[in-house]
Length: 554
Image 1 (cartoon, rainbow, N blue to C red):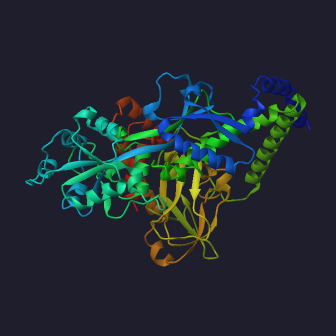
Image 2: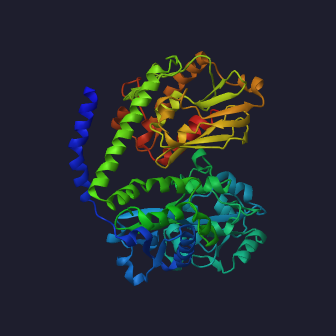
């Protein structure tokens, strides 16, 4: 009873502050709830109109009005390309990427030099020389004795500015020819063994399947000019991998122009937020049909999550009376406290053995001694675990090492129940604010259930990776054989010890890592690693970690 009285007094004390805080919020006009005004750069006007039509069809009662470009300062949202953004424009204080315009070098699979080009890639320096030299041969391009003249063809003349930036020269110094028709361009590239081309990614992509057109390939760009295709440059094989490589910054930025939504501040609920949410997911297929490139797989969902849903709640509360606002906040607090009390009760009364459920208290560091590696489980090489239940189903999840390395996971993308998977298949993605790791399945079989708790409480995969944070149950197809390829806990501990050393070497080898920064991640010489060490890095480092510590270990 005493605690209840203290809690009630606390609510009475915070009520005036809550009410006052709500009154101080900017009350949006009714127009902002149901309508939004936009302007657009001329080059993407047709795309923007398609977005507006789709948005209004999908959101009954909401309207988006396109204003003339001369009234940009009055618009709620502007859609612009990176090249058309005006530096210092007040309207660009907030911006979000909603699509891309990507230009690529292309070669035909029938080209006699095809295999040589794909094996070594071509450096930006060699491309620059080719684009500005009238008498360039394949021999000079590839370092061979070939005297076949090499020419460059463009799909249309509206990408010459990209090519000039890439070659670090002026447009009038380029030695290239342009073909107006995309069909003529692709045919010329196929027939002429001396020709390569530059076109938009959309020109070489099937609009329905998001796959490269048959018979053609993107020329890999050897960004470090070492004459070989390094592992971090090996993302040109298929559309999905390439588009993700563009997203995380592996592709030259001079050949990629982002399409932005810009505003003076982040849209706070209403039609503005609804329009952006539509564009980021449902409006993406429209981009490809308009000649541009959609966001990478999952990128739109991640960006949509960044548009906070809390703003919509504030808008609804502001529309009511002060008494109603205070009542809603009080109810929300009561619900939160009750839920926490219930979870604590369930945890303390659950009776689950501590060796199996060992909730992780946040730490500043971790080592092999602090990791939880339960006995009785089998561990895959891509940081997964598997445990056969009494009914023959195999429960799988990620190990404690991986969740310590990633830090707090903000989203888990999972496959649906009923889908068949093979050992080594991509089975789930761990996402943290736009960065992700793709995890492979330790077993083959059919997914029989999915942990729905992860959709609403993602943090449980960090706090309880072996119990509440499980991911799937799978009906195995070949358990006897595949279980032999996994490790018991005692053997897995030895491998994890080696991996701690490899992670430290990995960190020390990263470009731009100073001794001070390295010391902040490895807290003692030969000792513990900083918990959540990948959190402070961008997606390109996550991609390298994926390649070195997940893909290569399978």
